[in-house]
Every structure is written in structure tokens, then in C-alpha cells.
Image (cartoon, rainbow, N blue to C red; front, side, top):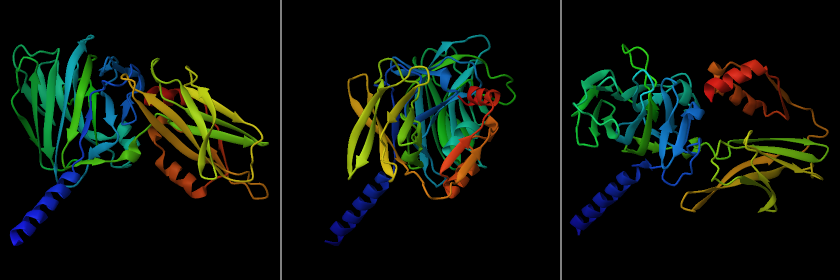
Length: 377
């Protein structure tokens, strides 16, 4: 019996260990053609990436254009991980470029996922059209006759070392390229035209990406990092009239083009209105008259995402339309413009939460706003 007890304990330990392993896989097959990749990702710049025919394409020329995985990242704890993806050359477009991964994308000043997406430092792994594979500053020549039309990059690692193998569609392989490291944590991303030290300009080539896989005991799930498909909402309450705007990402023509506004009354969610998404601004505007402004009212925006195979997935964005603060002093938060280099404004967000203002007033300069949106996408 004691052996049976030992076996049971070992079995539970194995189950417990396996439950900590969080795998991520994306083949993009069920996503309609569009710019926005999905809520598990954020692309920088947004406009340079497309989901086309079940894979990702980058057609821009921005250095280190990338798609960050938001919801699965590398823990600083001990463990291992593996990431792989199929890739291929779309166009050389002048100077030769590169493709691969950014590993452990992390911003020391601001550990949030948003800061990492735009300002995080990382370890670089991939292949260059100049004829070599690279990993954390190490390089090895690609095999003769390497097929740029389709190849697979695989990287394995832990807090002490990394190893990478590149294999093309013909079976040509670089062999294992290794590098010592001192810890790794943060996001991972696929990247186009990666900037490499001592290599000058990163090139302007375009690549496609597919069958992205991330696994291992260092991989942790952060579902709160998901962004979309309802990106955010804003509303006003004035003279018993509520106007609410839902901001959507750039969807495709075959995606669902409607969103619903639901209110919670006595614990039950009721659909109040359905609106189409305005194609230029990618917004849906709701207006409700004869509003009861004497109480807080929970609301949510419902968007049903439709896949290429006809499947449907409901997505919600929840908030509260607060009551009119009649008879109480107003707390007004006055916001002015900031340069894009200050994004994601974490101290500002934290201070707003502490103040919990009744009214937010924003003053911006159009030129700065245009510059910020141009750079951050």
C-alpha cells in the first residue's frame, strides 16, 4: 500500500507540474482578412501588418516592425521555453532585410505590457537576407541554396542559455546556434527587419509568418493583457441624455460590423441598442434619452467576433455610467498633450485612479496628436 501511496503522490506532482505549463499557438486560419491581428496581440506599427489568407504579412518598411504576444509571456522564474514559427520572404524591396523573434521584451522603467510593446529591450533571434542567422549577437552562415520562400525558426531557452535552429522547406539547416544569457523575462514578438548592431540599416524586406507556437514552464498566462476587440469607451451624461462611444480596431469587411449596448438592471443584462461600426473612425455611437441620472448604472458593450469557419465568440467591455453628482463638489481632471515618448503614461493613469475625478477635460494640440498617432500606430 505504501508504494501505491507513493505512486499517487508522484502522479499528483506530475499533474501539478503540467498544470503550470501554459502553451500558446496561433495559425491565423480562422481570422478574416484584416489589419487587426486579434486580442492576444498588438502590432507596432499597426498599419504595417495584415492577416491575409490565414497568415500574417508585414508589408511596411519600418525598422523592427513587430507583433507582440500580449497574453503569454516569459516569467523571470527558473524554467524553460520554446518558440517557433514558419516564415517566408514576400519581397526584398531594395536593401536586404531580416525576420525572426524579439525575446524577453521588457522595459525596466515601466514593467507594463504596453510599455514593453513600444520601448522594451529584447534579445534578437532570426535570419538576414545578407546570408546569416543571428542569436543575441552570435552569427552563423545560412546553408548554400537556402530557401527563402519558406523556413522555420525554433528557439529554446532558459535563464542561462538560448539555442536556435533554422530549417528551410528543403531540409537545409543551420545546425544549433547557442548563446549564454543572464536571465530573461517579458513579452515575445515576431519581427520584421530587425535592427542589428554593426549591420547598419536593417533593410526594407517584407516577410510572412504562420504557425506561431510558444510553450514551456517559463510561459505564464496574463489574460488581463488582452486588448480588444472593444478597445475602450467614452461617455457623457448631460441633462438626462447619455452619449457613449465604443472604439473598435480596424476590422475586415467579412467581420461582424455591429456592436450592442447592454445595461444591467436588477441583475439582468438587457440590450438597449445595436449600432453599426463607422468605417473611417471605427467607432459606434449610442444615445439614450430620458436617462435616470440618480444612480450608477453598469453597462457593457457586446461584440460578437465571427471566424472564417462561421464560429462565433462573444466579447464584452464593461463599465459604469455614474450618477449625476448633483449637490456634491466636482472633481475635475485637466489633461493636456504629452509627447508620444511618454506613452503609456503610467503615472498619469495611477494618479487619475487615486483622484477618481467626476469630469475629465482634455486639451490637445492637433500637431502633437497627429505625430503621436503616426509613431505609435
